[in-house]
Image (cartoon, rainbow, N blue to C red; front, top):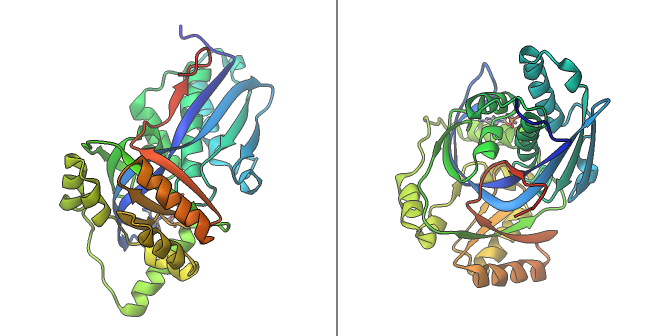
Length: 318
Ligand code: C5P
């Protein structure tokens, strides 16, 4: 029988979309068909689960005051999904009463970096370990997809191509380490609102869009470890909509470009902007330039790719 620890901590990473191509909206579901290339980066949240008489949730760290601490939090719903599933298979239901969920955030909230999805993926892995349900990758991935389109990638990590809603994943072959600088905004953007703004802009132009496909040139650049070429091929169809809702992001992008970034892009649905650097030193130069310009509320450096949601060894944290 699997051991049941008292508490489990799982670390999950933020993502940046190197390419985010948005196809037509499915009228039935409201979701858009995507072709996207995700990369997990070393900006992380830690989620700790421990046994408790009733379920509770606390949040500390970057943007904590904006995070729901009830069943509206995706991490809470993730733990519930595992508990429901565990109830089906486990005779000793007493072991599953409640769970205390403690989230330590470094990923910006409503920032376009899948912070909520990372917490949900971490909670799935942590609940599975805490209750000894040993669900396996396929079942965890299916649960992740029920929670949100970005949650399966938060489980997987690395670099991957996402199709359908962004939840059908194929790992991409990548050489090297990519050095990123992220500029945060002091005001979040709602993902549904950004997609709706893109629909509005497209309708205004009478634009018809075809089913999207990830670019071969970007995938070849990643395979070759050619950061300059990756920088040239960064693309985000949501950028126009994010800029329409937060016009000052254009200034942040311009400053990153002036600092010599290999490429600059709005991350996901924004408002975080992401800049690719040649190396560590170049990233520091861009970060200092962005911070000095005042064009961003905060600046952070990170590297990718990094793994998806993973258990931290509580005895000796590597
Ligand atoms: O799946 P998730 O809850 O993360 O998606 C948030 C919102 O983003 C959806 O309600 C939808 O408005 C939009 N979305 C979309 N097409 C996708 C993914 C997300 O329109 N492929």
